[in-house]
Structure formats: structure tokens, C-alpha cells
Amino acid sequence: MKILEINKFNFANAGADKHFLDLVKLLRAKGNDVAVFAMDHSRNEFSPWKKYFLSYVGYNHNDSTLWQKIKGAFRMFYSWEARRKIGKLLDDFQPDIVHIHNIYHQISPSILSEIKKRGLPIVMTVHDYALICPDYLMECNGKNWEEIKKGGWLSFVTNKCFKDSYVKSLIAILRFNFHKYLDIYDKNIDLYISPSIFTKNILVQNGLAENKIIVLPHFHTMELSDGCDKNANKERYVFYAGRISADKGVGELIGTFKKLENITLYLAGKKDENFILEETENIKYIGFLSHKGIMRYIKNSLFVVSFSRLPETFGLVALEAASQAKPFIGFDSGAYGEIIEDGKDGYLCRNTDEIREKIEKLSEDEGLRILFSRNALKKAERFDRRQYYLNIMDIFSDSSRKSKRA
Image (cartoon, rainbow, N blue to C red; front, top):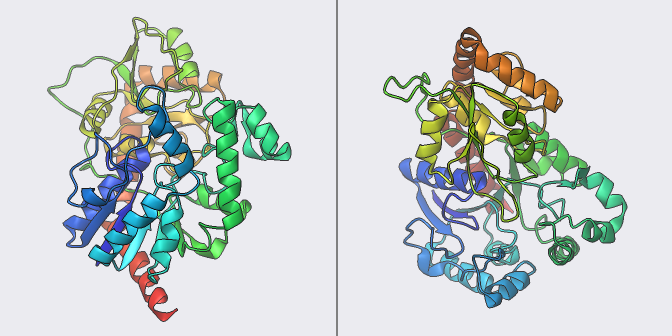
């Protein structure tokens, strides 16, 4: 099958991008002809389709010029460049189906009508909540989207719900309402893939048609491991991998480990611009790691931890821990409960005191860690990439047949 995969980045900046890259490799390994459409970036993986990529725009203080920021602000709404370039790629590649991931800002949904006018089916994997909320996290300064929504767009701006900025929040709410007015996503997208039941329920509660959403959990790419590296450093540490930011609860995580003795916390990931990371004797920041680096640290850890209370759409880090036979400890939030069974292969906690208690308990009880590790490894078998491939190809084939009949 000829498949066009679309994502804003062609490198692993976050979990959604990693899933995109893993899927491209999986589809190609099974003999499919796969093209990629993304934004040009210095960190992109090599692609023979690079000539079609969009010009770079940036939104952070340290990674873009003023012109790139201005161009990026306009691109959030609509991009004639994106529409023109996707048209050329479609004409040259002539895919059977188009599968999109995250396109909101760096690409924009302006490509959707260009794809649809060629009669091609469009499937979208939902990695966050940008379809139903101006801020993709569904959270703002401790308030959820339902609370903010009651106050209208002004409340979203005055609470600086997007990137802790009045200006960025105003642009985000205008962009969101503009795309809602055009109905640009729902009228062009044939099917949404949700990585969890939890996420599907939120999408349906916020107006997406249930019959247009199918649940397909992500997959892990590593060979299952018993979690034991005989040549590894035997240092006792707990591992966190993800965005280093306040909304991910990293401040609380650090505060908790300050009070713990005889155990080290390793933090890996991209640090938000305004986040002040305090390192101590038992708290170490090891920077942004490759996926292989992350898996190596997971494999040699006691267990993996997260302090995020966000409504996570999946929880890939919990699955990666399980694939390396490592327990996971986090809050009972988002879709973690569809991966972790509390008290069997990890702990899902209600508050900070409980999570600290479980960290101490699991770090001190080797027998319990061994039991949890065995259970985690069994759980990881359910998220096998071979089964995922069969499932997504069924989705693609069915969407393609329906499109031809329409």
C-alpha cells in the first residue's frame, strides 16, 4: 500500500513524534511504500521527500528569528505554502491513504482540503486534545478545560492558558475558534485513531462523533527484556523521562526526592524555557537522550516514575518501562490505568503523600520489585508491534475501500 504519513517534525522531539517515526519504520519494514511530509528542521531524520517539506517556523525565544515567529503565527491559522507543497507531493507520490499526526501549528490544517479534493481517505491519530481545546493539555493553572470554558475566550487569555503568555493565549484561542468555524478537521477527516478508551471518551464528550473514532493503543519497539544487565552499574536510582516542566509535575517530583535518602532520581528530557531545575546530591539531570539512551537507563533503574496529573492520552513511558520489565509509579490520571494495574505491575496514586510512600516501599522491597517486573513484562506482550501492524492495516484498507465507494 502507498501511505503518506504526516507530522510536524521528522525527528523525535516528543512521544507523538517518536510514535510517528516508529510507525513509518514499521510500515516500510512490512513492504509498504511510505512517503513523509513534515516541516524542515535541522534535527530531522533523512528523507527523500525533503524537497516537499515546509519552511521552518519557530515559536520559542531561542530557536527562531522574528520573521520565523511572525510567519509561524500566521501559519497557525492557514498556510498557502503548506497547501501548495502537499499538492505537489500528492501528485508525485499518489498515495492510497493519508495518515496524519500532529499538524496544528507548524503545518496547519490547510493541507486537509487539498488532500480531500483528490478523493483520498484521511485517518488521524490523536496524540493530544488540540481538536477540542485551544491548549492541547486540557489544563490551565490547576483548572481543567471545562472550568476555563465557562469563562469564555477571555478567561483563557487572562489565565495565560497557552505557554503562560497573554499574547500566545490570544492567538491560540483565535486559531481554535477559526478552525472550529471552518469545521476544517471534522469535515475532512474520515476516521480518528485514539490510543486509549480514556481519550476516546473525552473526544466524544466534547463533540466528536463516536462512530468516527476507533481505539488502537500504541506499540513498543524494543525487544522485551528481563530488565537485568549484568554489566550495568548497580547504582540505585529511579528514572523519569519526559518533558521537564511544571505542568508535568517535575517540580513536585524533585521536591519529593529531596526528602528521600539512599536513592537517586535521574531526569531525562527537554527542559521548558522557564523551568528552573534544581539539582542536588540525589537529583541529577542528564539532558535530552536518544530513545536507545532512555531505554538503557530504564533497563538499569529500580523503576520508572511520573508526577504528571495531566489527562495523558496514552502514557508511552509506562509501556516502555513494562517492555524492560520495570514497574511504574505515577498518579491515577489519564490513560495510565489502561497500561498499569495498580498493585500488580506498578502503583497509581491519588496524592503526593501516597506516591512518596509507594516510592519508598518499592525501592526498599526487592522481592516486590521482582514480582512487579514479571507482571510488567507480561503486560508489555499485549502491545506488540506485529499485532499493531495488522490492526492499522485493517483500518487503512477499510478506509480506502469506503473512500472508493463514496
